[in-house]
Length: 321
Length: 98
Image 1: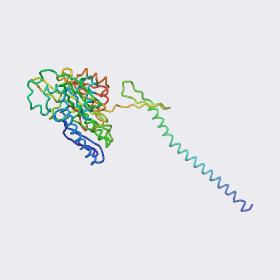
Image 2 (image 1 turned 30 degrees about the vertical axis):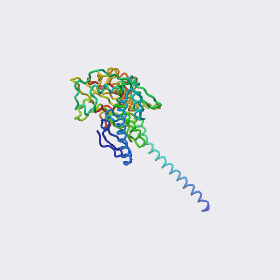
Image 3 (image 1 turned 180 degrees about the horizontal axis):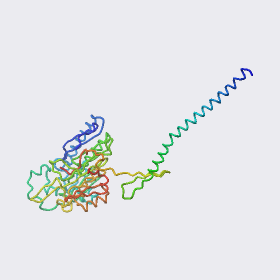
Image 4 (image 1 turned 90 degrees about the horizontal axis):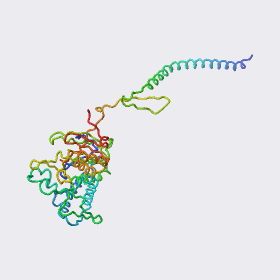
């Protein structure tokens, strides 16, 4: 990556929500930039405290522990949960926030960093936990949520994208900005002199210790791009491959021919939901859905193919010959 | 004839001589100017003829056609090689969660 940025570009990096975050803000006021970037870090920490399924004292964990009864939730949890359910409706259920039981059944009961240290043998068996997003009940007037007994929520990527979007909204009045939430990118205005923030789509065939290779680059401004993939967060259970993208129909890791799915959208929630949904659905159904939604999408298939929708093709800057 | 009555006549002669001389000088200068202009006009005429010639076959690279005018011209553009397009290094990249 290019570290030779203009002096007016201010950057902050930190760890949050299980990912490495980076935020850029273009302004001529370094003191104001430092304060604003610190606010963004605090925002991620605050939201993680409320929305993480890995923290037993988070508001989300408390909601999950109270299934079978109406529970009043905070504005933050209400916003993110309703957004996730809206995305489930838009994607026909291929994105579903009610898959926590299935995720844990297949081993993802701790953070991915800790996953390699636990015994996974015998997991993946027993009853299946398909998605049940339509079973969640909401009382908008009272901001109350009813989860059927045993049903549990995972907000995962939606929470990360939502927070990244909040960060951009916080910074945008100060100047052009870009938030990298562990590979989910949300951009404000383009930096001065550029048509957008220059970002690359990473190739999935890169080992963690190697210099990353890029498939293509594009300009990003006032939009979001997310990549969902099973190229990295994957493991084995008794010799069988497993990963974190659960098929809502089966409650099992999706049997998809896709490897990664990159989607551009107006906001982070749409990009996240569609990237996940299209990858879970596979190359035929997933790309068809993106075409119908007129979204810019790029799928890398497991046999090495690259599929792009016309809106994505228009945006790409091809790599030099 | 007296000295006073001869002065206006002298002035008139001098004036006539000045007019004739000036006219001759102007004529010579104008001729030289015309001599200088003729080659330029000839060159311009040649360039107009050359730029109006080009008509590219359909299988040639893209042709840009200028708005209609009384001098119809076409300019043939070569496609810009991809390798020389200016590139900006990416600030960051999108990838699946690590």
